[in-house]
Length: 164
Image 1: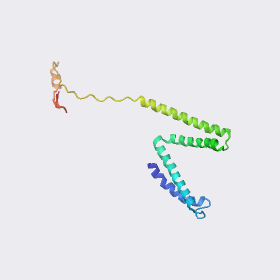
Image 2: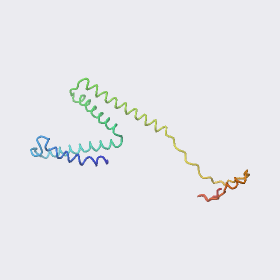
Image 3: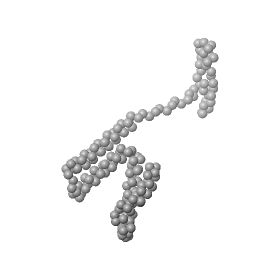
Image 4: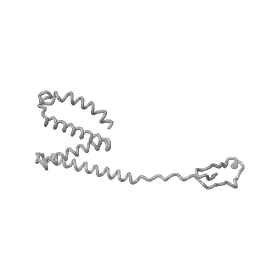
């Protein structure tokens, strides 16, 4: 979302400045009828939603997957145009679109398998053992030096039991 907020205002300014110049018949010669204004507004909303969904996808899946998703969309549009509208495509174009779709599906399958393997290999950490609640004492020390080093301190635990 931060990238969208950073780039879209500048993109809108550039588009608004250039569109009247390069878009025939130009801003001033266009007939601004009600149906034309409605269609232009709907086109703007659709363009915003396409860009917004692209930013959401890129933020959640990463740049490589976003590029692959764009290529997948293009290949599906080409194949759909050929199947639904009998658009002209050479056999090489059909093969390329079909191979692109198959490669992206294979890539997705492999990455999903790797993620599931890595998540199943994660082991849960065991919680640390609770503090001792039984009083322990040390007897039969072997030398006076060890007796000096051993200090027994009594502390109160949260339960109120004394420990050593």
